[in-house]
Image (cartoon, rainbow, N blue to C red):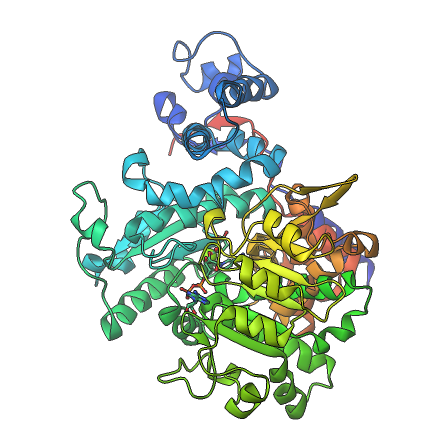
Length: 605
Ligand SMILES: NC(=O)c1ccc[n+]([C@@H]2O[C@H](COP(=O)([O-])OP(=O)(O)OC[C@H]3O[C@@H](n4cnc5c(N)ncnc54)[C@H](O)[C@@H]3O)[C@@H](O)[C@H]2O)c1
Ligand SMILES: O=C(O)C[C@H](O)C(=O)O
Ligand SMILES: [Mg+2]
């Protein structure tokens, strides 16, 4: 590298949006009502003069620490007053308080969230966000994000300019058709897009001025909502077929026309459309489907962790027998990724890819999927068991989950079924026959009440030695004698923020399989040998900002290696290629937004 290039690199990788004043074009109440710039009681006296704020605020100027203290006292009061510990109404009340803060002061909101992510991720994200979506009509105060509806056909290209931000880095879009395991929540699904973007800001340091939650309201098939006088969305049945695709096409064209650099994350689309839309757009647009691809990566990292937890090398993964309950967007995403990972370990050829199939048994609402299944979903077809093979194992088309577990004696039982309690006593008893020294249970469905089993059930029925992971957080279990049953949170939150940030900073035009694989491998490698042997296969959420940084760096590195990286701002493709691993990490770190108040200066438009 020549010296000039070195200086350029150094300058680029240390660029932050930090300490220069921010020019604002408004004053007075307008600024207090603007969450991007509002500092509430933290406006200094000179700023109050400059911005015509005198008299509009109590006279005492507070430091941001004092503000947070006051806010936290309010938030904690709820807990002190609650008789029975955290309960649903309590969680909703916390969400309300946090949401009000989000509305009036974004900087402070994200400061609170980042500093207390372990405590408040379960409020702004799963499980409470599910409750929020279910109750959205009642909770709605101020709008957040954009709504495109079936009524807006032909208008989206101009509507997109109604959004005030010149630059948008990250969009999370849903059509509300399968929100967590709660089904079709129609327009109320906007809550999930908002929750995911909260993590983009808190974990990945995406600038909150450049995120956009989007709801595409094409109607709902939820009969209760169709009749509810308070429902905020279109009270028509969902569009389907070509009409539906035309709406999504128009939306994609509109947002990529206005913001060609944006990344679009598809979230909680029913399986029927999740795969089709992913195939339709993934080679043209910078997009991915979190439920299919993000979940797959997180599951792979956990599955590899479970192999290591048995004291075996990762390369033994292709020997694992895996029973998957649920063959929707998430289940199939995991199966495809696990199959590919096994095939790679077995020699990465056609026969390895074929033989890997023998490690999976897939059970859906109709039981074990075999080649005898009528009208089989094409996505599930490769995983249908040969009937002769199934019979030889004492199984048949439609065999129950308990039967399958009893006969197969799997190493891993993984649930993405959205059916709470599916891993019943009978199923867990059957898993006691597992040939593994340390069976793993992934109860990945969300929110909490949809988890296939609780950790208490897993540890008490199958044994103290099991590996347990769930999609929504549970508390560790006291196993007595000073032993702890560790509850891992196996949630795509560990990957999607890093996939988005890495894609943004690499400037890649698409999100390749290799970039997703690199993200998963990075997460898998994050856990130490000691941790996995203790049954800790995913990190705690308190480390999410660090993990996300590492995942993003792995994604950038892979994009460079695949020659997809086109650069970001002053870090062009050539400069990017010159960075070593450490410098990539530094580049990522320096481009992560942190919630600090900038000094504001008024300038007329
Ligand atoms: N932990 C995570 O990161 C994560 C990520 C994505 C999705 N999820 C959760 O996974 C769940 C499923 O999501 P999806 O998009 O795949 O949904 P989906 O509706 O597309 O699929 C559900 C699948 O479960 C099957 N199923 C239903 N009842 C069953 C039963 N009794 N036994 C076995 N299988 C049964 C269905 O036939 C279907 O194949 C949701 O609860 C979602 O919240 C979790
Ligand atoms: O939203 C989550 O918590 C994970 C996942 O995307 C889901 O749909 O359940
Ligand atoms: Mg989801």
